[in-house]
Amino acid sequence: MAVALVAGSAASRPAAAQAVSFTKQVAPLLATKCGGCHISGRRGGFQFTSFDALMKSGMVQKGQGTSSRIVEVIESGDMPRGGGKVSKDDLAMLTSWIDAGAAFDGTNPTAAFEGVPAANAGMRPAPTEKKVEPLKNGDVSFAFDVAPILLDNCVRCHAANDGQGNLRLATLQGILRGGDSGSAIVEGKAGDSLLVKKLLGKGIDGQRMPRGKPPLADKDIATISKWIDQGAKLDLLSWTAHLDDVAAAGRARSLSDAELKPVRAKAGAVLWQMAIPDDEALVESRERVHVIGNLPASRMKETADLAAKAEAAVQKELAGADGQLRKGGLVLYVFRKSYDYSALWQQTLGGERPKGITGHGGMMGDLVYGAALLPATSSDDSDAELLLAEQLAAGALAGRGLPGWFVKGAARAVAMRAVPKSKLVKEWKRETPGAVRTIGSTADFFSVHADPAALTLAASGFVGALATPSAKLRQLLTLVDGGQDFETAFANVFRNKPQPLFDAWAQKEAKKK
Image (spheres, rainbow, N blue to C red):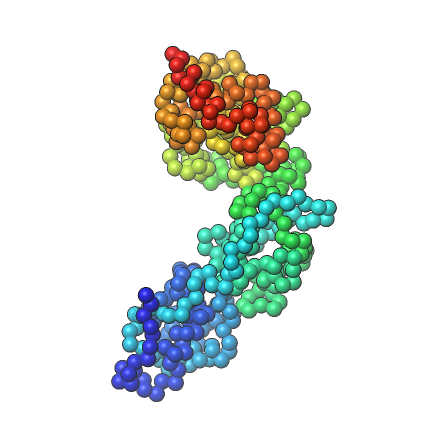
């Protein structure tokens, strides 16, 4: 419980003729204007919970009001960012108190401030969840038009975990929720929206935004305003999705295949630099796949040719003869050293790479990728082609609302059909019954908590048995891409839910030698 800062007896006061009272004037001012960020929180690494903490912070220089940091940041307009503007009279009062020696007239200098606003003070009640709506002709796209502007100019200071003024602009949910100063937008009314006012620098307390950067171009502010006036529609993904992913989805939908290819390639180079900064990668591009790796130069060329062949085979399985595996193509990472692959694993998935796992695929923003650990040389290119096909399929399946077990199973099942002559195909089929027996339980399988290598073998056997011919797999993907949830789409295609079908298949498979 907070201890009240009350005035002490006359004998306890350092200066009987003190004109400004800390407990009656200064403390309430600080609690109201600074409390949400610097008393109940620690914005910018600065927090003071009591008079004693304030004095130890270095923000106040006794006897030097105008030279004190706390006065400087208020006078410049930099602060407060969430508690409203400090009036000239209040600033003069604070300065006068410091000039006079910043005396404490309470009973306990370590007592916590009272009357501090909560960290989310001023925020409106939780907003109603936004659902995806189709755009009409002339509508501004949140994904393609608005999200990139906010990412470039606002999210750095108003991130998901530590937004200044408790305003978090990294998701649409955060934008709708608002911050300490209230709602960021008023749907349908751009002129009344705090976000627009801040960007224009009109009708606001404090500084124009973005802080420390040039004002936004008029056309960008007009784009945001039009989006708000049109009802602040969400046109892709979900309102909890990070703007990085939303903007990437917008580019994937709006850009042409040729325009999207360099975007994906650039994202691929950025990830390599983040994961393996000390090793410059070699790059080999083919029509639908962009290969990045550190295999020997001659082997990189061979691998790129194999990857192009594998991509074409996987495309036929997943998209049909006339379909497209992934708009803009895919990026494929190939490695000759296990620790390099482990570094990419940690960068993309976090944690340590499980034993026996030598490849995976995924999607991160603009990047759709597969990754595989390959030998520097190979006596049988069909095995390498199979491994490449599996991870290209995994990348193509990522980001489509499919559960993990299905992605793993479908990716390998597709690869086995695409490269049927590989020796690994026979080996995987031979090992599947044993893998099923080691899974543990059906719940472990569907929650992807089983041994990763065994789970992939079991999942590929299960999906491969179901999705024969491949048209069934393509039918399921079409339904999911069209908006159906996976469970409904699965039941529509296979006439039952996943669990009973898996139980029946696993019982038969486990009996095999």
